[in-house]
Length: 358
Image 1: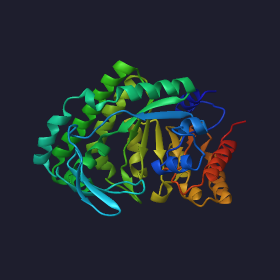
Image 2 (image 1 turned 135 degrees about the vertical axis):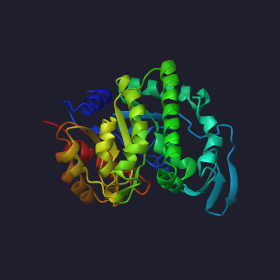
Image 3 (image 1 turned 90 degrees about the vertical axis):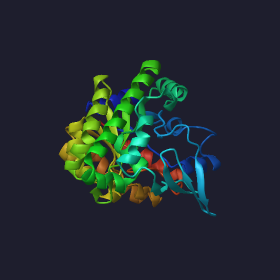
Image 4 (image 1 turned 120 degrees about the vertical axis):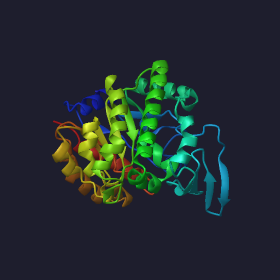
């Protein structure tokens, strides 16, 4: 069974030989493992570990495509810069990390209206046609399930105006937030139409949409339904109209939103972040007949570089969540360079042993 066949069947809850396999890594991990000689130069994780999937991030969703990044301040350890969204971000120089959001030029409807015209038409300059074509071909030749990956509307809006402005204005200026959400939804689908018509359809769609933090979603279920769900139904509906299954990544605690995300049409939830409060076993019991799952294996077990700790984590979850043929092995986040290469190889070996079906 090829990886493509396996993932297709898992997303449809059909019998397979084993659970699927995929993973995400911090950039530093590839650099570190390559420097240590574990990976060949420019060797992909997909090729090295034999993953069932491959993704490619084809779109540039920065508001101003012509803006050249400006350095605002610099210290020995950090660099602060202004980007094409009008956001001021601070990034660490020496390790891969999520940048700190310092300030935003778009803070209200008036400043949004100045940016909106740049987002109304699906400009082909936003699309990396060549790289998508190359990744799609690589996946086809390797028998992997190929997904277009990219942002959905929440992950487009908060880099533009910041979480605080976005969430507060769901109350203070709801029409503005709805307008932003709808504008980005139409842009995403418009760009997909251009790309897929020219380069062909992927096997599936993978949306990134971090809607939670530790212990709570960023918004109530009612606010999700009012401001985000219409855009999700629109973008996911486009995928479904072309028989493309939809995987949605969301870090943080999003359990209260999940019934509505399922209603929006997702086929698989990815990440399932344990340290944020997500419980893979609970979600599998509640929703395993409706969607598939990818992740939910506490990456902190791998941080330990202790095989007994990894065994306990895998043995407590995999025999249960593989029931229903709807699970893909993945950590609940991304693998950092502090995880030893041998540790990660053991994790895969043990997970695949536990994830096999008789």
